[in-house]
Image 1 (cartoon, rainbow, N blue to C red):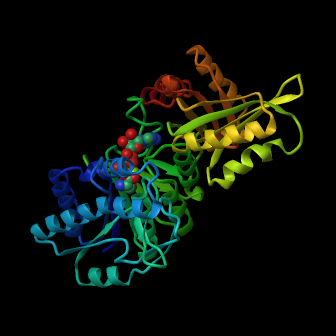
Image 2 (image 1 turned 135 degrees about the horizontal axis):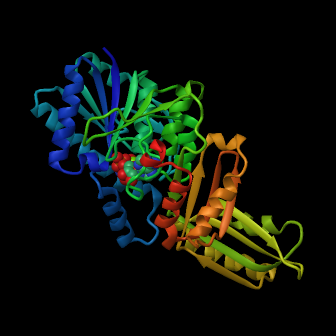
Image 3 (image 1 turned 45 degrees about the vertical axis):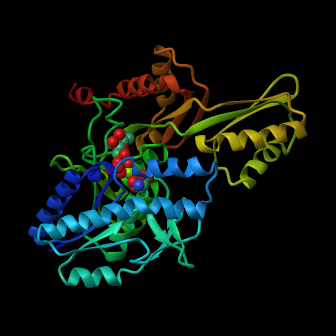
Length: 409
Ligand code: ADP
Ligand code: ASP
Ligand code: MG
C-alpha cells in the first residue's frame, strides 16, 4: 500500500462532470489499496474571473484582499469533490490551506511555503478517509490567507507529498505529460517518458506552465517522485527524474515560450560608470523583477539600455523609467508589450558548439527578426514580436528534430 498525492488542475475539475470523473479516478486508486491525498485547483477560468472582478472594483487591488478573493476558487472545488467522493461511498474530507496549516511567508500573491503540519491529514488517512486539500493557498503567521502565484496548486501538491513522505506525486492535467514543446502550438510535439529535474526547471522557468517552477524545486529538494499525466486519458505520462538517473542527455529537451514579458528601452544615456545601477535601481526598489538586459554603446559616447519585465508591470516600469531618463538626460524612452520570449532548453547544449547559430539560422529562414538574445549554459532565449510566436516555436522545434516523425527518421 502506498500513499499517493494526486493533483487535478483547472480543466480537470472544470465542470460537475469532470469533478465526477476525478472522483472516479480517486476511487480507482483507493480500490487498488492506496491512501490518497487530493489537491485541486479552482475550476478552469475561475481564477481569471475573480481577478477580473477585483480589477473592476480597483485598478490595483490590495494584495491581502486579492488573496482572500482568489482563495475562494479552490474552496469551491474541494467541497464539490469531497461531496462527490462521499456520494460514491468513499469517506472524504475537504480542507482549505489554513485548515491543514500550509504555512507561508506574507508575500501576498507569491507566497512561499515555509512548513506544513501533516498531523490532521495523517489522522484522516489512518481513519481511511480521502483528504482533499485546496491548492494554491496557505496561511501566514498572523492567520492571513496567502496565495502561491499562478499555477501554485502544483507546488501545494509536491509540498504535501514531501511533508507526508508520499510515495508518488501525480499531477493530472489536460495534456498527456511533458512534451518537447507546448502540444497546443506544435501538434507534432513529442511526449517525453522522462525528463530530469534540471531540464524541467529550465523549461518551467522559461514559461512552460505545465508545472509551476517551485513545484519542481520542491521535488528536487525533497526527492519527491513526480509524474505528469492526463486526467482525460490513461497513459504513462512523464516522470521527472533526479539528475543521477538520467541516461544519455539529449542535446535539446524542449522549446518553451513566455507571453508575459514586455520590453523597455532608454535611448541615448550618457555612457559612464553607474548607469545600469541608476536605471535598474529604481525598478528594483519598486519590487519589479527584471529578466533580460541588453546594453549597447554607440559611437557618440551614449548608450542604449534595454530590459524586459513582466507584462503586468509594464505600465509601472515605464512610469519609473521615464522619470529616471529625465534625471539622466536621456534622449528617449520606448516600450513594447507585444513581444514574446522563445527559449531553447537542453542540458546537452553544454558540450555542443553551434547550437546558437543553428537556432538563428532557423529563425532567419522564416525571416523572423530577433530583438534580444540571452544565453546560459543550458538555454538560449530570444525576444521576438508576438506575431512570430507560433512560427518561431515551430521552426525551432523542427530545426532541432524534436517532433515525433523527426525521431523516427
Ligand atoms: P492545469 O490547469 O492542469 O494546471 P496548465 O494550463 O497550468 O494546466 O498546464 C497545462 C498546459 O501547459 C497544457 O495545456 C499546455 O498547453 C501547456 N504547456 C506548455 N508547455 C508545455 C510542455 N512542454 N508540455 C506540456 N504542456 C505544456
Ligand atoms: N487556480 C490557480 C491559477 O489559476 C492555481 C492553479 O491553477 O494551480 O493559477
Ligand atoms: Mg497549472
